[in-house]
Length: 418
Image 1 (cartoon, rainbow, N blue to C red):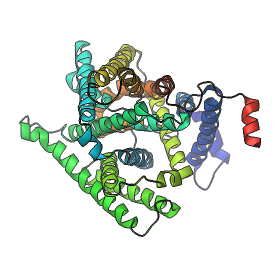
Image 2 (image 1 turned 90 degrees about the vertical axis):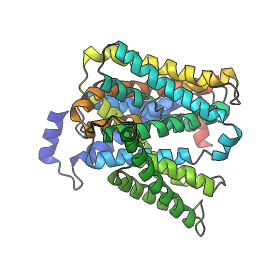
Image 3 (image 1 turned 120 degrees about the horizontal axis):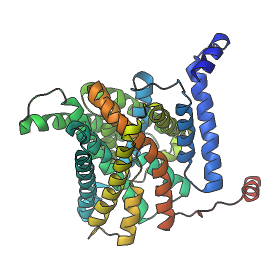
Image 4 (image 1 turned 90 degrees about the horizontal axis):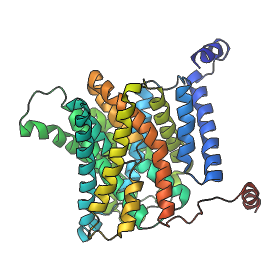
């Protein structure tokens, strides 16, 4: 592909640059592939997006370099921040007051995942700091993949809502711990205060930026309609500003967006309608995020020696999340069968995990490279396989209004003509 791009560059000189042409064509192909796969197989469109990105990365697509930096890193952070803001806006804190076992369930599955992955990797003689980094990254599920699967299957119900809440909370824990750990890599102190200080800084800065974001939007809602497209544009612009500001001040941009969504839900508890108004802009950014993750992960230096470690991490993480959700289900308001499908829906990994790997790379190239050699194949595998497992769990839980086997081409044409 590099040779093809070199030939193109001799005669094709677009005003926006050749990478813009490459990404435009790649996104167009991903959109078509996602639509066709969802239409004829019933699988979420994200599977098609990821497959196209994977094939492009394996073919040597030159539009995304690792480690991420500049525009590509900002777009990934912005996409993750937008997803987490919406995810945080679905959670009402008063729910935890009436059902505190949901928090217990969340802590159990995240803690069990981190502990299991760490000890299994140490048993396989992986270095302690590498195992620790992978364990923290493994805590985070992917609200982006889950939300896309829910949208494509039109799912609603206890399993859907619980999985969205638990995945959002797992990201909260992982983002705070990874940001703090990456910031403390070059510190020699071992005292408890020195260990907790980076966590406090990340949470404090993220909380301040998130609070400012929530207050700004709450003020705007006093004179702007939530259903107005101008409100949606204001939302995206403020999240973009917060994304650039939080990381610069020592916080976490996605964490600040999540906190902003949580706080705005408490200040403005009425159902939000602007998520529908985000429309094509949000969908395009989300698709770009999935394609970027798969391209970057596929372009990584794949090492056959770590293939066994990748399989072990995937299996250990899946079983730990499943067992954690089931073990913490007592008194949480869902049946044991629903807990099993909720645990299955928690397995995807995607953009948030890639962003955390990028944080380790920025903090220490040596440590980050070792973590990335295992984490990137895991992320790529669990973005595709995780989306399939999530869709299967939603269908088996009976919460999708669409059948698993979609209508044929003629039925689809009839609906369009109608």
